[in-house]
Image (cartoon, rainbow, N blue to C red; front, side):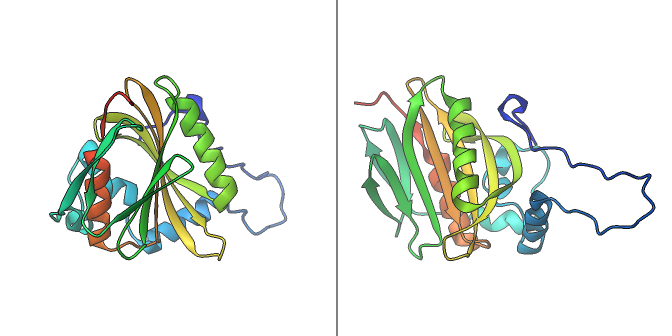
Length: 212
């Protein structure tokens, strides 16, 4: 798992004073609690989607992500991107944010231009902070991967929606020659294999061009 140390790694756990005789219940950090929840919920979604960028064989639980997905090519000249939108997904623009939502609304992707070509690190840090605030989200993994042709750091978080439903978030800040894009994927805690395959197809298909 790659970590951008200069972007702020997860804080180290504070160790208790071993000299005290009185026994106390152990303090478990929120990040650890979130990670335990993921272990019960299944494998890390980010690893499943971007596993081609990781060494070693994939476990049997990820084979569903290899399903063939029918998709339509979409071009967004003002954003400077093209992508393959899985059949049945719908898109919308709101305040310059492109949102794509799966047929059953269990997976969505939000994409927007967030800065110049050199703003990747700043955008990723700002996005992580905002997601932690809005969704009370805790980081559970961080590794290097590709969104289409752009290399980036993908952070996976577990949080809760306003109605207290658990949610997975993949946060990415991918840079082209011209811009840096804030890309956030939201899923239910245990998306189906089909939805994972569709999300994988969409993110792998992203291509970058000069915005018009």
